Length: 364
Image 1: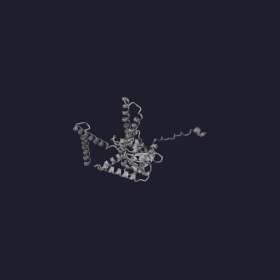
Image 2 (image 1 turned 180 degrees about the vertical axis):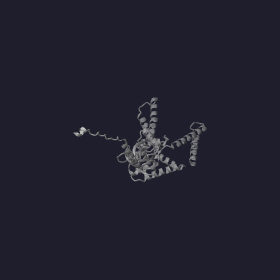
Image 3 (image 1 turned 120 degrees about the horizontal axis):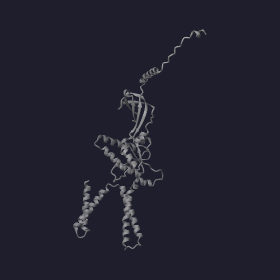
Image 4 (image 1 turned 90 degrees about the vertical axis):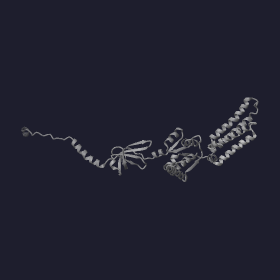
């Protein structure tokens, strides 16, 4: 760091000394010296600004500017027949000489991603199916389930890991908070595990967007540039990307879609783990983490019971299942009581008494 400061200081002194000796402003050596020192400081300022620009953007700007300058010179030479003494012709020459290099400079910087080695090599490859890019988010890397999905072969295409995501992971891994530090190191381990998998194409992208400060917006711009999809489990990033027209693969939505379908009236075998919020409720969890709220199961905590599904509630956070536990002993006791009540409720049939026969009838 010290040697760079010394080099910049010597550069400013050299420019100032050259201006002092050559005196570009006339016979005023002091003013020429100040002019040279100012020019040297301006060059140092531009050097500091260019430090944060990607190399591909610089090359694209230089190539675009050179192409624009060549086109301007060609058009200017083609107008040899014009009257050079006419001010309108001179202005037209100046406009072409300034406008075309500027347009080439801007267009070259905007399309600088075509100068990446992957893109250049792709131009010389045989025409084949188009590569599909999947840009990984920081949250989905720390989550870790992406490694299992890649291992099963369900994640196709090229996994793109941007450099700014790696910097964010490294920043989290170097945090003073132990929880954040463990999360960051877990994310780096997950990336190393994915890179070692056979059949998984992983690409580290150096493309950056200096004008964009937030990492989520950089991910959206990168996915739009590559015409790929973002892989994340961040709810907010999912919504923002969809609003900007970028496709998203949400790991949480995938996990919710893979949960078993349960219909009301089905029987389930669950383990009652704890007491519910409402009276006489018990709470159980399925293997995928789905919560099951069971009525009449408070006394069955710590036991595996059969429950009848009554309803299923689907929310943005996941799925909740509501069921009811039918106690066999209570049902057995309820059956005789129900029979006795039915017997009492049944109307009693009384036999009508018969009159004895009269003597006349008996004589007949």
